[in-house]
Length: 372
Image (tube, helix red, strand yellow):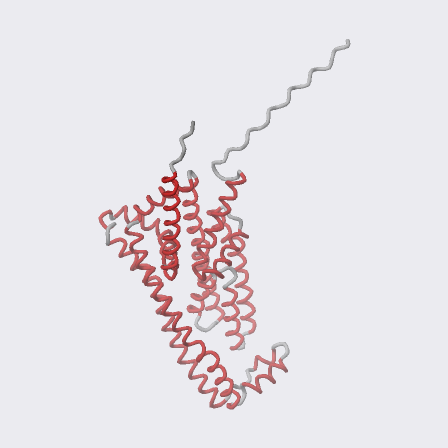
């Protein structure tokens, strides 16, 4: 006979469950602003884990404070140094741009010679004469642009920069403690995964880690490669500020087909200089580079580590970017890869799922009677 469960024990279990769900929901609501920092710290920790493990093996005494502090400082420098160089270059260009605007307000913007070689050149020339050719028209357009962009967007840009700066600072703090408590945290996560999900819990954790690393390799490294190749193309073609534009291309190339926006900017700069042939060549070479990277190299690097078809990789990346911004580049494919792994386990195609035994063979038919 089965023992009747104690009603008090059952009530206590339900009370603990309700309390746990309530506390988790309240904690998520309380820390919603810093959840991106936690996710960023986890992504960065997974990305640098192989190098960090080697550093721990060579310097075991630095596990407490020194190695986490050094690793966090290096990550901060990797982000802040290119950002500072970009801000310095942007400030330099802003001075040049302001001087150009002041000259345009005083004298107008003459119609460039290359405008006559474009399609619909008559309509474009008429628009140019009406809006930019005279000082009065240029001053009016500049006042309209300043009123729309500067007045309305300056406060939003300032708030966004302050918010992102706080998130970045908290990400560094979280990363420091994550690296310092890495071993204990991984052990606790493995125990919790086995208790909640059974034998497949550890596989899900490994799949998440592999997905994040594969996405980093396929997006970041391939994006850096695209930016380096296109920087050389920009230098040969004579694009203004080729190194800065190559750096921006590398960042945009982390999003599939995002580098095409930078190719268009480079082409516009070349057309502004009258180099239409080089503009066509830059755009053609850029699309070839993007085609090879996005259709051959990137699917092999991401799909090979996640066992995920590139269509689902693309959905995870684009959907993640739309929902979570830059963080979605890494979170989206990891979520998709884990979901596909669970689906394969459910339909019997995952690792560790044994095939169903074959049905027994039907008995052989008896031989025909011998009438001889």
